[in-house]
Length: 161
Image (tube, rainbow, N blue to C red; front, side, top):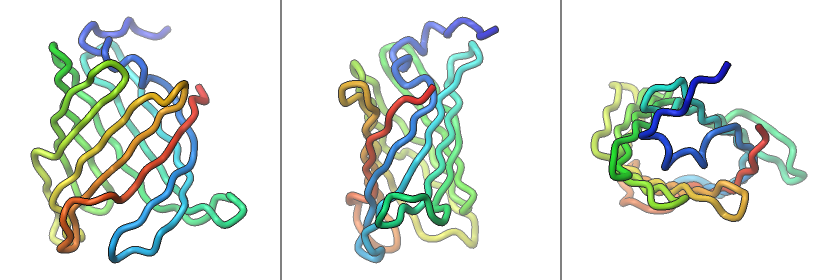
């Protein structure tokens, strides 16, 4: 039995479920690539969503290849549309984003970035999520490896559950 959605999560309700799709990526020191992705947003009745994301490289025919990245965390909702996102990456990076939800659009910017001793240099991120018709679209800009904040990933995902 699924618990009742916490009232603070009402603005994020459009994210709930499982999403799959494809996107493109690149960065000054990375060759452009295509990737497949699955994202999951869940709730347990508390004022936060659990979040997981996994990506794989796509070959020229659109077949899944080698795994690329994973991240998991919590989207914490507050009254007035304020959002906090706490993310962890197996590459040794943890991030805290602050942002807001307006309609079916969420914009987030890093407030804190922490790295382990062996993690690559990463200093900031900016994320946009929103509905494009029935699909979930997003764009992710990052500042890393001595580069300023600039486009890194974008994707369009379909709800599968």
